[in-house]
Image 1: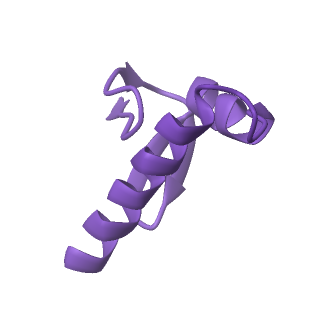
Image 2 (image 1 turned 90 degrees about the vertical axis):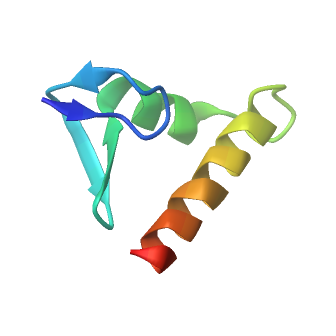
Amino acid sequence: MHQCSICDNNKEKGIFIYHLFVCEVCEQKLLNTEPEDPNYRFFVNKLKKLHQQAINS
């Protein structure tokens, strides 16, 4: 089990971006969210944090 860096839930399946885990559900949401979608900014901000964490590690 790994904790998703987007939703903070523990999941078994997903991907690692650098050393940070993104669950399957969040991965699909990331891939399918259009820029016009209100959730788009949420994902952009989460990815910025992931990037910053990766740089600081």
